[in-house]
Image 1 (cartoon, one colour):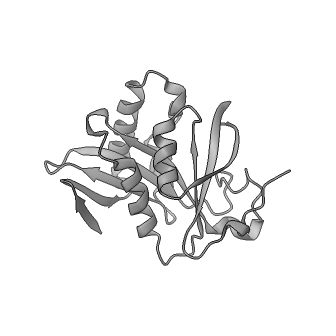
Image 2 (tube, rainbow, N blue to C red):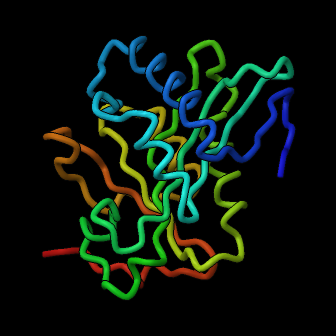
Length: 188
């Protein structure tokens, strides 16, 4: 499925594009003043490729000339330890219904077009009709642009805690495909 908007083209990406995703996210990370906003130092192309399997996928947004302008990575962690449902105390029978928006990155020269928000919406559309009932993500509390994009897509902050080696992160959730907010139980 390919969709074109405002001269940008959105499409699915698989494990064969893990290297291109890795290069893009590293370029974004290297250009950041505050690199703690985007915890990618330990992530490599094998990590990315692994998340693009088992139902996971990437979303690539490209210019008309074919340059990758941004990327988003969605994993389907099942009962794996990376499932953010564990962090918020989700019932075990609900964990297989969680999709995780792992990483979103847009090159600086392509910002201002709502690409992150549009990639999130594209990913949600791709998951329509699947067993996934909620999408979850983490965002630094010091990253208002990404938080605003997620909130515009209907995500809500459920919990804020240290993740990824001590980095403070909001954990966000959005029910999809008939999922309900009441399916979530927060740890006490």
